[in-house]
Image: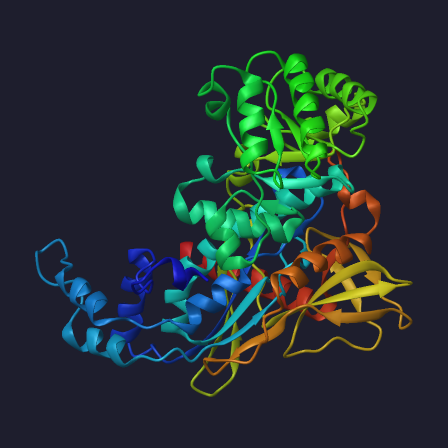
Length: 492
């Protein structure tokens, strides 16, 4: 719903070099040449063993409204080169004015568990249009995928506990806050404090009061009583403004008053101090007073590692309010997704495969019109195979590790499979029915339950098997040899 956040065209949400390359394609007569680009990432975030695909909804919003507006064109017309002359000629601006989005887009559904080098998006269409989409698509996918993955890791630790997203005030601007709230919910959080996210995305909202509320009264008890009197159906009291244990005792007193009115004390919140010790002591006091169903909420710069440590210490926390370290992806603030040309159509209407070389094996791209096939046995995912749709796999395919050609896996005919990339746009028209945010959220947990538990470890996670189908591996290898030999001849 990014178009509801901004009331102007987002078509210039791109890097200048995308436009200068588009201009180059136009002037050289290549603008309409068909090309294929793949969007993928090279390494799991947070040193983990899995990643959660997220952001497709925003991509659909962006592409559905993709038009170069008159205001955009006027601005582009003001840009100049080093000689002071216009950067773009009027005929190019006119081309942009009449251009209609006509690409085909395949994508992995939101909430799918994905792995390095697997395309999350595949774009096929006029190379000029494909090029213009690189920056915005990476912007929309990278961050949301990062946050959804972080949230899913916290859900693994929390188990059946409630997870609340409290990060808006620490997020990188309004857009960062909104997209983080949505991605966190898909990743497994139960609610957000972000009211606008609740309105636009249908996410449950939760929240009570801050320390300033307590400090504005003559006493802590008065602040609790006043709050409970005004809002008896939403009482979670922040008990650590002065003395936490005394604050819990005051909360119990207010809870007894609430019960006389037919309400209950929903929870207490701990925002500082030794959360393990304080939660244990608070639980004793609450249970001793008959408030066994009252929740203990904890906040204060939590992440999955701190949560795991608190659980190991026997903390009695059953609601976790997580902010900064979730919405900023504090320990790894970027996913590192890339967008690479993989094929281009010649004048003879033949696909010519493309590959980017590098001195680092991990940065050598994979050619082809790629699809990802996920194999399953007895409801457990066993392996993912990347193949070229122009050369479909045989009935008994062989999968090759792209970084160690000696590691090859023959995939049995008894395995069932599904292809992960599904059609989203055909000739620029939306053909995909986007699942609800609730469905995307369920998909994350359903998928995680079908993988070996080792990929969910935080320390030295299991490496899930992902490889290239034999024909695609051979194609990539042949291209590498061909390009290296050509480059060597050029040097000589």
